[in-house]
Structure formats: structure tokens, C-alpha cells
Image 1: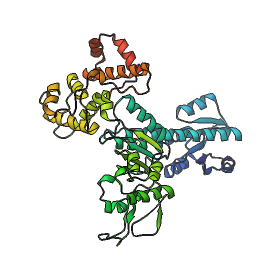
Image 2: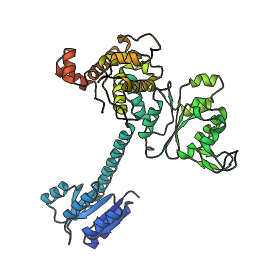
Image 3: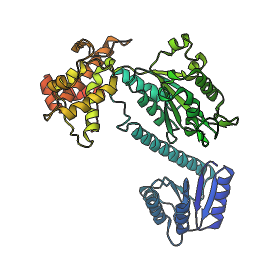
Image 4: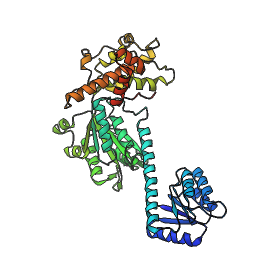
Length: 462
């Protein structure tokens, strides 16, 4: 059915005609002869659209409309009347009616209005779901924090690929946030209400990989005391995230390939195929091309997974994101038991930006937590960083190296990225006090506001 519609009118002939016209168009139609009956019917089983007469015995249409909107603020109501006036139409719209039609009803006008009202409801529902998905995707545990060019590119790729069912292969060093990218894709997809199931392929003993992924039946091996569903079944209708897929044994790779090709899996010890509807997102810290050359990874599986490749840059290639990440971690960690959120001085942030971070964002998070625990002053200083953190793994990075690699950007784009990163760092340093930041930088406050708007700089929510 194209939609459920309730026709409310105290004249049976009108109810019957409207029900017939709408029924011919493929709508599921119910009728009610009074406002009270309409309220009860919508409460029991909400309708997509209500056609509501204004002049009725008992509760009139305007009163019914008001009660419907109180009962269901999302209700779509089109008012109809044989005594229509501009005043009545305005009153109906003010109380939340979608539109107003006069009797005798023109069938074409009626059907166009119904179509518009239902489309409006559909779009409103999709927007609400997108807002919900965005809120879930930006949960503090899973937020992709930063404004660097590399991270912006990833966000653009996620926005493009998330609404599709395309498989994604995410590559990058350990600790760069590959799981966050996978979760963002899931939350931006039509599967967001389904499960997000994560499997760390490197952590599963080789002899248990098939059972873990595909499940097993009772007695299929020693210790299999009952039937057990695998991760593919658990992710049915949602997303399966295969982290560190480069560590999988070749025999398990072959079975994953079959699952991707045929949309079915077979439990260990069973012969019955089970259909699954799963979107697979894979991640690896290995160079799979080298693994294929060495005979450790199947080339056919690689091409099945690598529909949309996403490369997550290491933290040392986006050091301009360090202040934003520190602020994010301070807000998240400082709310924990026994913890106190403390600001980081500008010198402390610059010192953190000059480190190499071989453990990437994960290492930075651990460093922030350690500094919050051990720093004794009201803010974390450069001296705290030097005292608490171990020596860096490489030579200090000079300030003029902090901007992201130029890549294929134009000089103007590179300069803009550098200026944006510089302003964010200074705003962090002065706790997002625009007036103070402008004073220190020696520029009019209005100029700084213009640059903040130009570069789309937003303060992280605490």
C-alpha cells in the first residue's frame, strides 16, 4: 500500500466517495463519522494522513485537529469543508493542518494534495532519522575529531559511500581510528537501526575462526555442546566490521568470499545454507598488495572487499588536529570517576604537536589521560608533558612542518589549510575567547570572526 488514510466526515456519502477514489489509487483507507471516532482510531493505529471535515456534529473539525496534534504532533491533516472561508482556512493552518480543501472536492486536486502531504511526511521522517543517525555517529565515544584536510576528505568519502551498500576497505596504522570510520559509515546508512558487529580477526585463534564467523552445530567439534550462531548471522540486517582482516587464515578467507558472492553462510558441521543480509566493512593495518604477492591473502577476496578504499592518515600527518583531539579527550576523560578536566596550556599543546605519535590517536588519548591524572596544577603545562611522557621516538618536528602534506592541493588551498590550523590552535590556546585571541594575534576582532566563518571553524562541544 502507498499509505494509510483516514477519512473523517459525518456524511456517509462523502466518506464512501473519498474512500473509493483513494482506494482506486492504491491507498489503504479507513473512515470515521465523528471527531471522537477519529481520535480513537488514530490512537489505536496511527494513520499516515487524515482528511478531516470541519463542520461535524459533536466535536467539530478544528477541535478534533487540535486534539490530534496534541495526541500526535507529527500527524498530517488536510481539512475539508463545504463552508470554506479564508478565515477558516487560516485558522486550520494555524492549528497545524497541512492544507485546506473546499467541497465539492475536485478529484485531481485531492489526489495531488494527498500525494504532497504524504511526501512531506516521508521527508520529515527521513530528516529525523538522519538527525538521529548523526547524533549517534557523533557520540563522544565514536566521534571523528579534527579539521585537517585529510580528515575532511574521509568525512566526504563517508558521506558518499554510507547510503549505499558498497563494501569498504579501510586501511591505516594501528590506533588511527579505522573503527570510527566504519561506525560512521554504518550510522549514515539505511542499516543504522540494525546491528553493528565488530570482529577482531587478529584476536581469534585460527582453529576457531570459522566457528566465530559462521557459527556451528552441536557436536561439530569437541566442546560444541549446542548450536551457536556466528557473527555473520548476528549482523543480519546490519553491518559486519572485520577488523584486521589481513590476519585471517586462507581457508577462512575462502569462506568469507563465498558468503560475499552468494549471500549465504554454512555453520561448521552443517550442510544447510543460511541466507544473510550483511554489509561487510573490512579494515587492515597491512599492505594487502604485499600479502597477495606473498600468497597470504586471496586476490579475489581483496577485489570483493575493496569496492571503496579509504586510507586513514596517521596522526603525524595531521598534527593540526592535536588541539581538537586533546580538547575532546579532556571533556570525555575529565568526566570520569576521580578525574578533573584541566585545560592544556598553549605551550603544552605545541609540545604535543611536535611529537611523532607512533601509536597515533590511541596513544594521544592515553597520554591525555595520564597527564590529567599526574599534572598537579590547574592546567597541564609544557613541563608536565616533558615530565610525564616518555621521550619522543624521533627528532622534534619543527613548527613549520605542522601543516598537512601539500599533496595535490594548490598553493592557495595549502595556505588556507595552514591558516585554518593556526587559528584553531590559537583559539584553543586562549580557551576560545575570540576577543583575547584577536588581541594576541594583533588583528581586529571582526577580522577574526570573518576568518572563523570563512573556514567553518566550530568550537568542540564539551
